[in-house]
Length: 76
Image 1 (cartoon, rainbow, N blue to C red):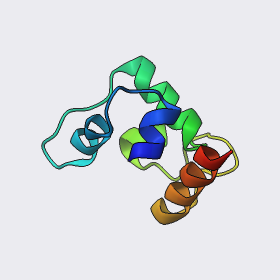
Image 2: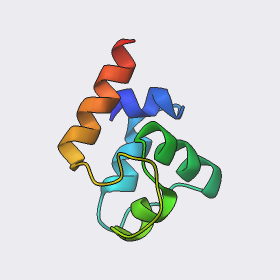
Image 3: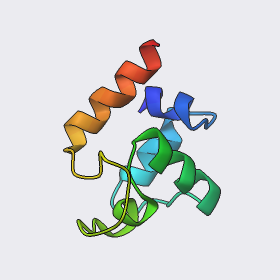
């Protein structure tokens, strides 16, 4: 969450935590675009999990693989 917060950027990783929590808040449109770009997927996939959504080549990677990509991006 901390690495993704820095990639987007948001001020605190707790913002990401709120997005992931059931019943939590959702990112606004501009932040949603930044999240999709950071995770190398589409906004539609993030919103609906639609496997047929057009997105970049990494739209079908697992959540753990996405977390790893974020961690790797943070290290560079």
